[in-house]
Length: 224
Image (tube, rainbow, N blue to C red; front, side):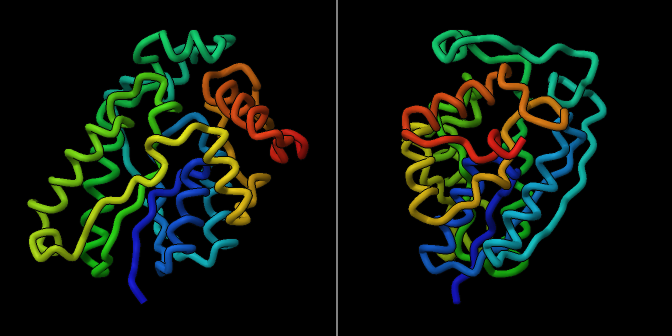
């Protein structure tokens, strides 16, 4: 059975990507990252999602001592109360973690080669990027070339980077996940580390918009 390494944060998009990869016939190996994020609760959700999907789990702990993002610096304010339009037009927010996806994908590529996986999956998509430069199609296409030219399996044409959600809207991702049986109640999107979603950070706003457009109630919000 062909193997895939799937970046799993515990959020909605990465959960859908994991279930998508499984649906495509891959034996999935989820890799999670503890990088000191304020919303560390997402790691507990990621573990539940991986187990429900039957994926193996690998947790990687990193330290970013230079901070550089409100997601890893609890003294920095997280943007809140913005509309989806303001988020879209607001440029790169303080929640951007410098070069995060480059770090994560590099580690995922190493992991993939070590287990001879044939694909690496990431759930990034443009609409949810809030201006993040490493959530754009151009970036992922470029990193796909890094995998193809900078790894042994890539040179042998045996390893590729997959980003199936990149051009989908949040509502479309939710609809896809519903069809795949993703346990949305176990996902976590809020940037703040509270007991329940704040409902006002950029991630909460975009998630709520997506469920509304998909004509669904958000089970994670209902649960809390």
